Length: 422
Ligand SMILES: [Zn+2]
Image (cartoon, rainbow, N blue to C red; front, side, top):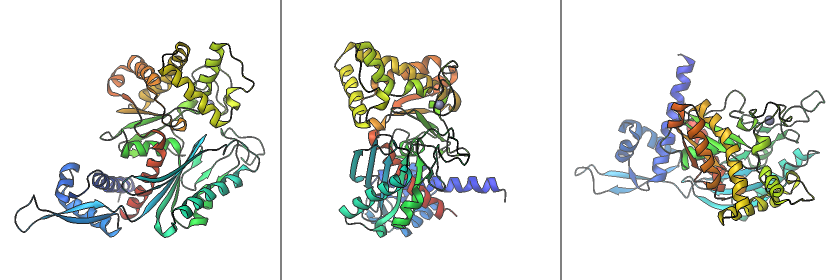
């Protein structure tokens, strides 16, 4: 059998299972017949998939639909099994660390959030980060009286570069040559997947934050109904992820759509990635604080990039609030910043031609991004390649600060479908 054909066939199977589960998630008490109608799949396929999901305990048969069907052939309803199986989804953001217990219906049942300086120190940080992550999960499970038996899996979103296969967050200081490598983070290799799996003996998934956000949006957010979408992650760092033909695109190295590291100024300074004049040097939200202070003639003892995470977030929120209240300087600063971010969106549109570009600043929490999004929309409308500009819609994420947690649920479920799609 042609290997590629086999692999494509498998992807279709995973996609169909995901689609059926998603429809059952969205419609409590739904008949197999109605699922067939909504998905366009045959009733035979739905029956086969439903049987597999029933066997795994992911869904339940919940009574009969007395309103449809002929006498003696009543439909049986299907619902998500909310009681069984929990997923722990974790987000190791650049500033915000979130940990949540979720059910299969996509509900976040419990969530803890903290602003941590997790990735700031390079010396010996890797072991400390591994221990810290294990400790946070252990505390959450103890607080809610859970053990590994209750878990379908643990998913962890982290900033790249990382390898989703072995779950290692890569460093800049251990490239083997003794010289700093070009990787953009000041940490040693962090064996996150191995550390968490060793402690809890469950399936553990580690994924780039932009990739996992793209999954979250495609399933639970504003990506419904489209097969091609890009997620544009803005804030303290600039990145992107892509769903192409309904599937997450990982490239050859789990690192794709590094939109923050395209050159926008070929005379610009060197970037931490090794390139010059990268977009991120201008699009990072620390630039908003710098620009605002400059316009106000304020000088601060600590440069914006050295502010503690929680303080930088507070300052950014303050500027957005001032703009919402009509403050002229704040409006000017954010409008200018929106134009810079527009550069990235135009490039994403031109390269991927997605049906939707979804914008998220999840590190900042639930912040109203409209003032930036208007500029980004305008940039795509005016400057993306003509036939592409007509196709691409630019919208704000509807999942807010929890985007990677929702993506984590999808990641665990997709793996399950991969295993039953053999
Ligand atoms: Zn760069």
